[in-house]
Length: 195
Image (tube, rainbow, N blue to C red; front, top):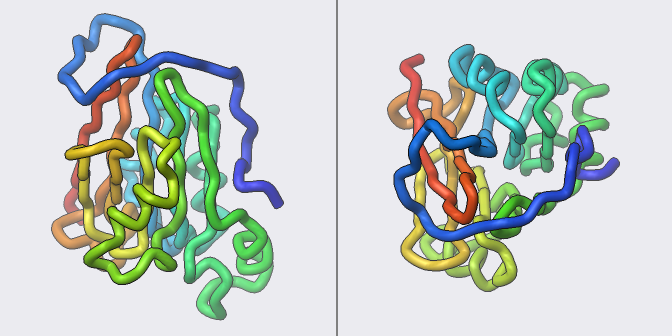
């Protein structure tokens, strides 16, 4: 099964750096999330209905999570995490989730977003350097696994962990990140929601 659950609606192209953006201009928005482990925070589900693309960086845990994310009509890109083929989830879900790709990319205005779960990028203290070296062509690398929300935009590619979007090990609340693309500018906003 391919990484994409729903194919991208249209090819796109444009870019630049992380800056605040005026909400008055049209923007393309991408919801970045990971580590739902079978539970999706209601505020993140609601946010998913207002974006153009959704990227889930693995450890989905239940196919119903992907169904919930897809209800708003956004393009959905999901990859598998280290727990998506484990015995903890229903067998039908395990089989389908286990067939998802381990990494994928999404062409966006201004660059390429790459996602992988991150569990094979070790040691953890070098994870960002490893991901940057693995995907030098990307503008943004999205990973999960640690459940810790991080935006590292000190160099390109940017490396982002949106945090856990469910209830498991959220470290301060369910998290996600919204990437906003307007013309040549990309901006990242980290969000947290109380459990």
